Image (tube, rainbow, N blue to C red; front, side, top):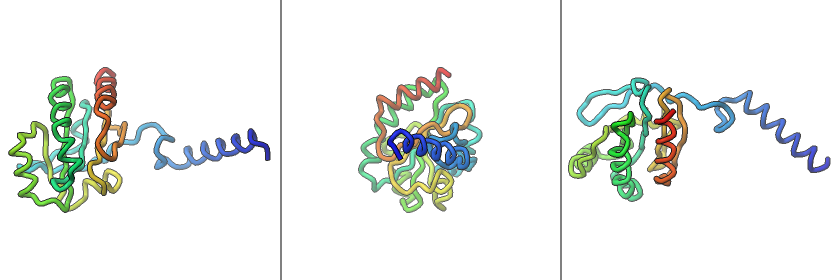
Length: 168
């Protein structure tokens, strides 16, 4: 089979797979964020679906994760920059983290956004079985996942994406 026919065949298979499977990343329009409840350190519960109308970043992290700790000031700066425009952040500590460590971290660093403990692992599981930290998920105003970042994001690119979503 010549190269053009092979490429056309591959493209056809990919298109078929995309139509047949919404789970393939990038094949369909944006997938909806899972409608899970996030329990904050104060015990209150926030449904992800209640954030519709806001651009939201859900950041999975751990106090033992050096990359997570290092990126936290940038997450704070990003939140402060966009919060008045309809931007929200949830920092969700992984189930293996110690609640006292998470609480102490949030308190000593005066984290201005919502901080939560995923004690059962249900939130991480709902967002695609997140296991690596940091992992951040950007959600648009309609409650659809726009981008997943594994590892610290490129904050300049993240800011451009947030600005585009806030303007939409």
